[in-house]
Image (cartoon, rainbow, N blue to C red; front, side, top):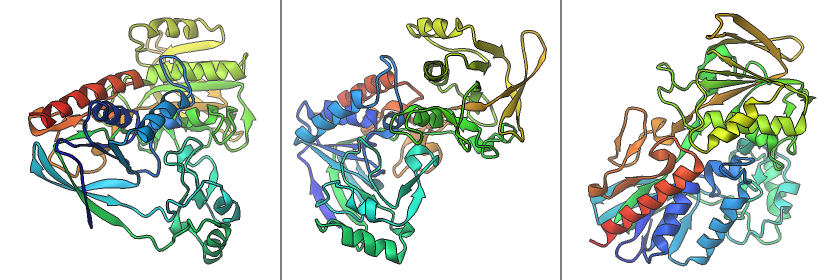
Length: 419
């Protein structure tokens, strides 16, 4: 165990997605030291997995690359990837935090040349692409990875694979003997920007996710549309790579449901309208069906919604989907009741997309500190305790709202540090 000391008034930011990056930069740029930690091998969070995001329909590089550069150039920010909080003691203005960093099995000598991946004989499911393709067990997490360093899944390496990876690296960067490292830091306040996870679609048994590759989630759709995704940006039916002639979007898949997520996840309707745009760009004549409870596109997004709803090949059905059945030809049939006409709808499509909701990370695991949370697992800020939530750890939100929330969190953390 080692000790890492910042100056008086240092701030810990837990989570390295767009919210954590924003909070860290806003805090550091007014003179406070910042410890920025991320549990994954790279920073960027969910935004890095998107093809485009609102309000400008930008690729993730639009927001992340400049923030990564600002992080690299700011000497007040210390970054720790593959790192989690294990314990928090003390109080406002004087917290002692124990951090644990998992082994990457690749050290700082790495130049990201890719020789280790080329030589690796073992493959794993590509988690970044939600298992829709494979990657080598020695891999760069994604094309914008920061830090730009490979990581090795040691448990997936065969003996031959381990030998091949070590032999391929001419920089002596592969270290399969790396161990877990713990350290303690002292900070005045903690910003929790721990983000969200897509709701587990297998919990909605009637929608048959996992029973057919033709049923995907909204985040899987993002990866298919992304140039760096499993299909090189082409929207194809998983399994047989069929081009899309018809597609259904199932809104509120698990959201606004007392058996799953009781709240609206705020972004799902807009995400579906965005996905309609992806489909229309590639398939001008494809039939699109949207099954919805309500369509929520607040403020300036109403114009975006109106354009998509005017699509002559798009049909909107107000009704909650009761079932999705799997057909022998690879297609699926979406079954619902039209709430406006009381008509039962059975619509056969090439692919169905489930608009799964945003679930806060701490709803799935106990937080490592004494945090106040609501019934859904969102963290409630407690400025008097110098425990402050930001982004989707605070509430389900889009990117713009997350950055605003994170700036506010930074201001609160700074105030605590300067009492």
